[in-house]
Length: 137
Image (cartoon, helix red, strand yellow):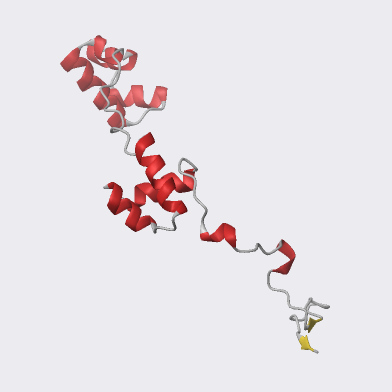
């Protein structure tokens, strides 16, 4: 607001204000227009932003989804039955708002050391700048 007032009063040019306060030219023009149109109060008002839409995953929907997940229903079938988007259901599951026993958690996890290693490969490290060699037993 201060910079816009300097310009409107005629004390400075917009270019001088932009250089002195290191603001963009479009930002300066936008603030001048705002000040001329609505006055200085416009800089102190709360922004008129709309909030988020209503909650889709209510407690009732959450309980039904968790019950159907326990019965091994697919996420797509559950979403159709509950009349919600499947992406909404997936997001709620991934964020932990809906608890499920996923097929991933049923599988045994591999340790960090087992990735890419095999018990029948010997000498798969670099030696003296040469490419790795694999020798099978």
